[in-house]
Image (cartoon, rainbow, N blue to C red):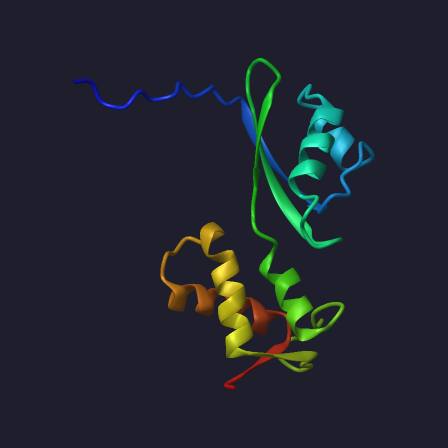
Length: 150
């Protein structure tokens, strides 16, 4: 008996990433120019992205990785929101500190860091939650956030 049939994967010409607000992609820059230079259908991407992110929180930044195929089609992979976005939201701040060593702009708890690490785990280069928490804690410190042991 033969093994499972593998799907033939399309060749990839190039790939690139865009970070867009969930459900709010438009053909205006940066989307239009980025897609048109690769000869892709702009409205097809806009509709796919908006449909895929419609149920997400309004305004949440979602990275999308696009793989461009030789026949001018694309495959879209959505990633988890950036750690900095999730940390800003958890701390209730608008932006990080310009001098993170000197000026602390907010606080996050270990529990919040763990929640963010669990959210980000699929996109990080680890499967260990403790290592993922260290990565998120590093991002928090570089933004000027204090991590409280609560």
